[in-house]
Length: 345
Ligand code: ADP
Ligand code: MG
Image (cartoon, rainbow, N blue to C red):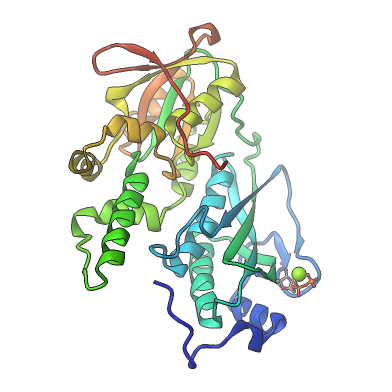
């Protein structure tokens, strides 16, 4: 996917750090009133009122992404989106991001411009300002670190620790598709390596591939819950897989839970491709990861306010801690949930 360095491309060593930063950030504008000064000085100047939430994530080539099937523009977009997802998971509105990159001389200016096209697009889409970062060289590959900031609602940030017994467990969107998208891309990449003339037909997989290559953060759900006047008692975003995130909520809230297999929202394309790959859809929805949906708990009395919304599905409820965290299968078997999420080490 990454193009070979051709004479028409600009080598980073010929450009120098300052010209590179200038080139990549010249289109960054500030739209948020809290951004007093963005890129250009030793530090950005922000003016926030109320609780501020901050989160950072690091993406390393070969560990978190493979440029064989992740175009740089998508990588830039995704790097920002996954950080914004953490801000929305606090019930907050994202306002600013900082982006730091370490890049080897295997990359050209044009490649970096593709990466930043994705970064700028994500900022524009979500209405956040790119207000700074750092640029350095690396011995090998590319590493990207994004820090995102946001403002919590007046009632305070929503923590993982606020769930109570009998609260309903709710998830946005559908699960597992991003993981299956990665399986599809990896398979196509292997075929391509063996036969470079192979033209992949990704039509039957468009939704899955899009969920992997162009994930979106659920800013809309935060806005929707505010409009419905529903304040989640606890919330987390699904980056590592449903079961691992449910366990986080249970542990930090000191409650148990019952999660119903038949309630887990799955897209029809995901179900079809699980059959094609001969894998169990529930297992993948529980452990797949990278869905970037929101998982939260609400008081039972708020059920009426959310029940008609197709973007939200009640998948279970919280119980006493002593009951543990369990999955109720379609056969009504009760089995303990295990964290099978993707592990960084
Ligand atoms: P310093 O030497 O003080 O670290 P830099 O030359 O690294 O300053 O950065 C100059 C300006 O450009 C700062 O506002 C910094 O935040 C911004 N900046 C540097 N690298 C990036 C990047 N990769 N993305 C966005 N902004 C950047
Ligand atoms: Mg610097």
